[in-house]
Length: 495
Image (cartoon, rainbow, N blue to C red):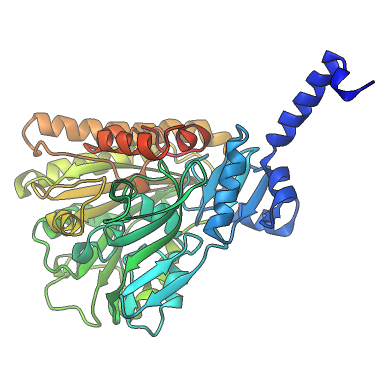
């Protein structure tokens, strides 16, 4: 029988098989390109899955891992994905603990590991950085150059997601968010086109990528401002839990009366089962080899149990901060933004938030391996000013008020506790928002614009509708991804 006269059932079967083959991105990539590909149980596949901060993400098993080495190879993958309806994910450093944001079950995982260039142009004072790097890789590559870029505060954080979420840095009071220091993005759009985005080329896309996450394209290279960098002074102060009231007062005062743009802190409280951990760990940096008198004295005068601050190379300090990464556990991270209370209301407002965190965390101390933390991250007005000086971003902070970004982390061992910890994570961020709202209504906090910080956001939080730039983001998405490729096919915060 001539092939054109096959019975209908056979034609339907062949069509089904053809669509099935088209739907298998892994097979299509393996059969049509030279892109590196790994499948389970290859050693590299297993290693890649273990390289997540949260084991909950690593437990999701992609159908394969794809390792493009160029923007064109990334574009080739996107074109193949356009021929099917598979869900996929793009991974940089694996820091984001939200399942599906940089991890995927059953679909292809695109690892940016091989997009790992770090190229310093001294004449232009720029650094071209690939998303496959962690920040410690970037600083190692820049060692001896006398320059740095505005990046993560922990060495083991990936470049890609950090920058696209805005990126809060130890250097932000000097230079703004990390995103404000991107001169150009190399981007693969949803149709497989490669474009550049800068202040002069696709400027709307350039702005949207500064805090817009993965909603617009896959960034394959960042051209960043190179800043002069020498040695820094920094490390940790550790305090006992009985210092809580004094530490909260000190954080509030530090944020309002910011003593020096070269100074930066993160103030974290930690609590674990049976009180095995119940302390404060403060991360400090001063961008210089010695710290001027008075910059951190409102903390040191409280009397730390440990003070290991010293002069170090900047990259060495970031790598040292990796001790704060507790891999081997499931993580949740969530956030809320707080307008800074006045000195007269500070104890009541900050105490209420700290008490809510304590109460919520103590309610789950029976969960195996549980550790809860709260981080108080000062966002003084100067960050908003520096961000606007450098072209603005999607976060669009004003300098009407000082702010504090709150980050809440929970780590635990077993997937059987996922539902409990999901409920707990919702309790902590919803309850904190209610506290902030009530204090605003009572006149004890200023009524301010309070966007969420994407890098610390929980997947259930409505990131986009907390941004006053959301309509602009939607217009850019309609222009650069009209088919909704990224909106419908991968994870991330949705408009």
